[in-house]
Length: 99
Image (cartoon, rainbow, N blue to C red; front, side, top):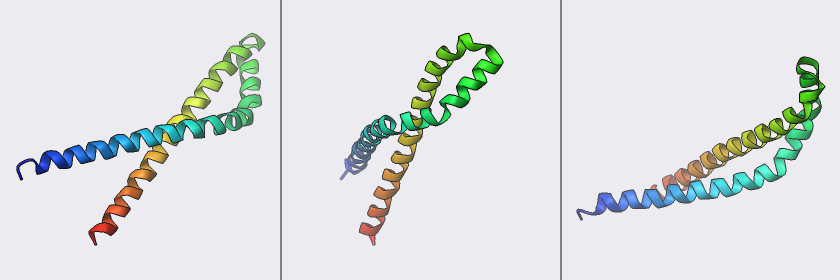
């Protein structure tokens, strides 16, 4: 019985690493599909802004950087949202099993 605390921590560690892995995979898939949509929605605005404020020579470099920023934003937002949803779902299932 003295290993009960260690077994609980191991179980939590396995659950959290699984949640993290699942959230990462789902976030990559979400990023693959959502990044082009978000980028195409904002590309013209960023291009006009950069051309107006910094000149036309910086537009291509800014758009490449903007694509990276868009992809990273979509990925991390998706990972946080999906990780939270999975964790809350797991807690809801655990709460139902306790009752």
